[in-house]
Image (cartoon, rainbow, N blue to C red; front, side, top):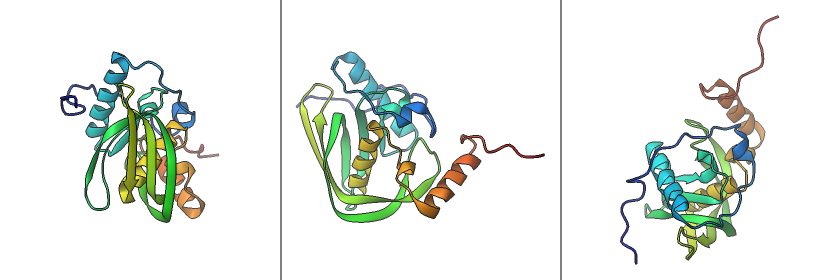
Length: 186
């Protein structure tokens, strides 16, 4: 086992891509270079996630189109799960479908009821290329599915339907960081 410092403790906080940014809606590329740049990216992602008070963050949220995400997320029993996955694959999403409040650091301050399975399994590797398998339930399963969506170019708002979607998109337009609304006047 490697003796490692606290994740993010030497990372730089990066600018966050916000909803509507092209990089959030494009599938990320697989990681092929497992060198110092990848270690730095993961460290910066932890620092950025903690600065934004999030529980997960994908590389495309900080402008890097790579299949990488980090997490520090509790499950429904308040057990802390901390780690990262490079080249993640959602290999199982099953169990009961639960509609619960979901937010995203790329839609700051907003959330909407989003359906997710209450169990998820993700496989990939770590920054050293060693195999990783992460099994989550409850809120942590939601986080794993959310981050896998990100690296596939999907934002949780894309999964929200009906009046919840209408309400969420209205909130996006009204947010100080949101898309400009339609022209008013004449």
